Amino acid sequence: MKGTREKKYYSTREAAQFLGVNVSTIKRWTDSQKLACIQTAGGHRKFLLSYFLEFLDANPQMKASLPLNSVSPEKHPFESLPKPEIFAEKSLDGDESAVMLICTRFLLGKGDLSLLFDEIVMPALRLIGEKWARGEIEVAQEHIATAAIRDAMVRLKDQLQPAGGSERGNVLSLTLADDSHDINLKMAELLLNYGGFRVYNCGAKTPLDGIERLLEAWNIEKILLSSVYHPAITESQKIFNDLIALAEAKSICIYIGGPGFEALDIPQKDNIIRLESYKSMAELMIK
Image (cartoon, rainbow, N blue to C red; front, side):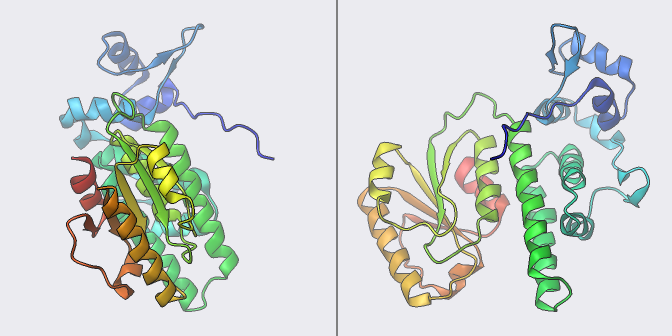
């Protein structure tokens, strides 16, 4: 059994490294409340990634001077921001710390979680899938990469605290009963949580039995349905149609995303909205 995961806080020294200033400047910013921090009983300052993002939003001129030149000083220099190829490489190595650091540096540079997924994570996942299709990696390596990315999403969730908490409504997220791919749901959960939604993530291969009771018990206002691959199209279509009917009866909007929907018949209904990217998810579900 795994133990409880401790939340990762950044130190004053790490904050200085991320923001490209010295330690005394970080202390001055926290003392003047320009930069949020948690101060321990012993006087030590601790930081979450969301504190840096809030600071950069309020001081956009700082972004130009961020030290985004590398994942680590000795490896893979970047011209500016991290690249999907390096993210894929580090994921396949199972290097969870490097994967997390790439996510952190990208967010500090661009400040947009949806772009991290669209420009880094999803292209990296496609690269990994192509390597597997060409026989360049084993299934076990693909699983290692997915686990490293999933771990980064969990750790980012701890780091990104939504302003005002989860008060914008409740979302139920799931894949259809024959789809085992859930990494997209983890990214969507993170994005929607950060946008102020409470997300009930049912995960992969979710049967519809009991879903109606959950919609009522959790006061669900939106359903997010992810689809990557369907081994049984006819059965998938039936489940999809049943979910549409259930949502329509309860006046719930269904947001759908993923390549698996290219194989399904999607009826033209007002309560079905197609998401083409995580940026569109942010624009259509959050803003």
